[in-house]
Amino acid sequence: MKTFIVFSGVFVLVLLTAYNIWAEMDRVKERTSTADTYSFYKNGLAYTEIGSDYGKGNIIGMQPYLSTYDYSTASSFKSCLRKYFEALKKEHKITPRSIVVLPEYIGTWLVTANEKSEIYSQPSVDAAMTILVIANLYKFFVNYCNAPAADKRKYALFSMKAKQMCAIYETTFSQLAKEYNCVIAAGSIALPDVSINVDGHLEVTPNGKIYNTSVVFGPNGKIIPPIVKKVFPVDDEQIFSTCGNTDQKPIFSTRVSRMGLLICAGSLFPQAYKRIAGKVNFVMIPSLSGTDSIWHTRWTGYKSFTNSAEFADTTLYNKITEGDAWTRYSITSRASQSGIHNGLNVFFTGSLWDLKPEGKVLILQNDSLTVLAPTQKQGRIVNLYLP
Image (cartoon, rainbow, N blue to C red):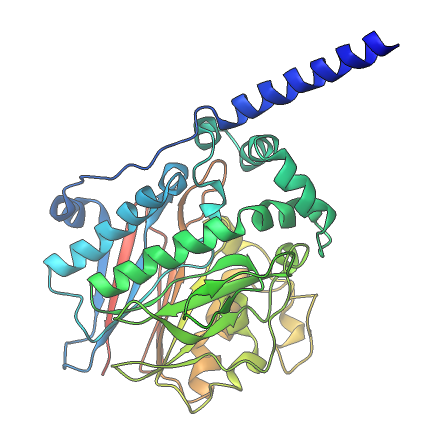
């Protein structure tokens, strides 16, 4: 019996040692890009300019085309984004009176940073996340057991990497804002109840509820309060994340003027505009949708929230498309009715395993709406000069 116990102990120790060696093997290292940014500006992205430069500033919708490898390290992530900023700088389109907005969830896939290299070449998100779990079994198990969410697996994935994700996200956008002397509304990132600590940095709450969170960085690289947490997450988000407080006031004072910030589907709800109505000069909306085909599917409303007439004409459910709903209820009518006459709504674009999000852009200029179709396998910049 004693021999068996000793043998079993040795066997388990060998297994644990082998597992730890495997888990740490072949993790990606930091690397940087040496891409020709001027050539990239001419050939690697779509550029749209609206209005004339009256010296009142411009708002820039930036849609980087992101791949799995762009999330493999902090340096890869920054290098990808920096190409777009550098391209704007070379063309003198980004100035101290520029405000840049990036897409929703742009920081969330940092969950894969510094992981095993095989993750980035997997055929599907599910396959990639399975390897991520196996390579971080202990951390995953602890966070899974403490998960305050219906989908414990998704919660545990983001929670176990939260500190690293948060650090890369803050450092990247803080440095870019300072380097290019502009304001950056840094899309969003899924983090456990993040806040601004006494030193002015982001701090996550261990075992806290996850919020789809957006942070704004000033030209000095510092965070501009408040932190914005998505008030109206859609059904797929609610299984692992939580609704933000409806009392938050997503209003920011900038060099240009006062900016409002709403996250994705929140821009369709009249309640979201009550806190900013008449108090901001323009609104920025980071968003994400699946593929372009979702814009052509029938719109069924948002069952998790109100389907009352205050939100939308319920007789139109299943009669108009998702795209029709966005153009009817988003910044076109909601913002204009709230005294906000200009704004940008930018959508995520890229190729992430079997996810191929395609980035439309909704542009509100003096109450007039322009909808740009998705680009084809390339990033995009939209430059809207303020009147």
